[in-house]
Image (tube, rainbow, N blue to C red):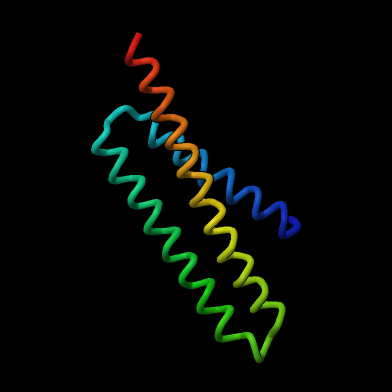
Length: 98
């Protein structure tokens, strides 16, 4: 069984690789719609995690902390995706100017 840290890293790597695949697909409209879908999934995940953390804070501290951790990781992944997309846009811009 994977440790929580390993699972978190695998989730981050999976989402980031999915974003890279989307961004590198070349179709701007498709890329935008898929990035919006990923953002929507992250919103849903973060919202569920926050709800779990709130609802279990007085009954099961471990579950509540896990919900909080997932919520924080969701924001971390969102930030990494934003940075990755910005970097890829800059690279694409530099390649287009040659």
